[in-house]
Image (tube, rainbow, N blue to C red; front, side):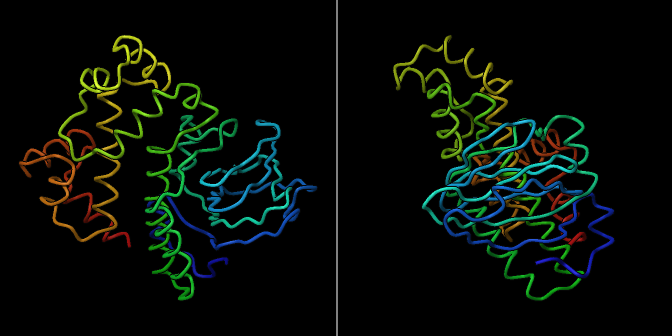
Length: 278
């Protein structure tokens, strides 16, 4: 469904959803035999089934349940079902200075468009909510679904595993990331204790983690907390103190100081900026 009423505030903010919907495809359907090129970005979350995807930067790839993949402006591609399975997905077409900057800085890469998020409860709820809101097509809806998409992008890029980046090649690293994601109420991630409990070489896995993710385990855990904090501030009415407690901060003032140091703004000003936006 394409949004007929666009939002100047979303455009000024830097992320605007132009269209979104859910999509069900039958076996051997879609656009497998035809290439197309978009002028905007797109995100597709494959909830059920398997799809085929091909572009010049990636070659032919198989998409599985729980994969999110991006389409890029000016990059010819084709995808659809090519098996006896049906598929169900959510799709968004969007643009703005934020994704354009991420593309320029390499955060988004046409050669690595796939992120595995699994059956992510947050992303499914946000997507279902966004589709429901489009029934009331107005400028306010454009703002609201753009905010939801920003939550999905943060969740995807922070928690998703990019197979092409090699994270799946080291099961231990993937297990650590899963453990971190499931234990963000801990004040910090004790890598040495984790290694002792799982009988893994500390020096080996510390180097493997940095090689796979590009950062230390402590930094990665901190960024997971930051992404989760942003998500809770935007998508819930929980108090800042409660959000901090959920993420392992007993002192709400320390949580606010930590958030400001990480993000540059306080949790209160971050939340208010989104309320003003939407």
